[in-house]
Length: 137
Image (cartoon, rainbow, N blue to C red; front, top):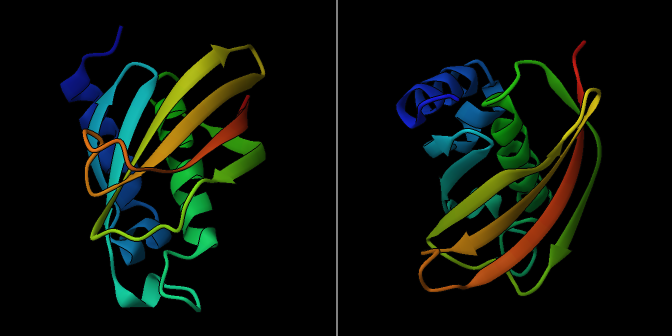
């Protein structure tokens, strides 16, 4: 079993290697075995035509939260499939994505993630998604 502090350090180290994550300003804020939490501060350039967080970035947050949840267990994963459900316009000053492993298989890892606006405690669920990851081996 991986300790939360060790998992958090591992994910932060992985995130630093991604130019996309650096451009976003993505923060890994929590991690434990099979779980990861990411946060992203709103920037105007993330907006779509109506000023909401762009669906592509919503999808990226869902994908990354799931990939990072899997990375607490294994190293190399690659998305084989993802789907996103949008519940309301993504408007917030901060976005919080929480990913978790649902089923760990030999070749596939099934994950889900939820995206909240400003605070998970407020339960302003903006989107959710499912990601199937392939292992690198």
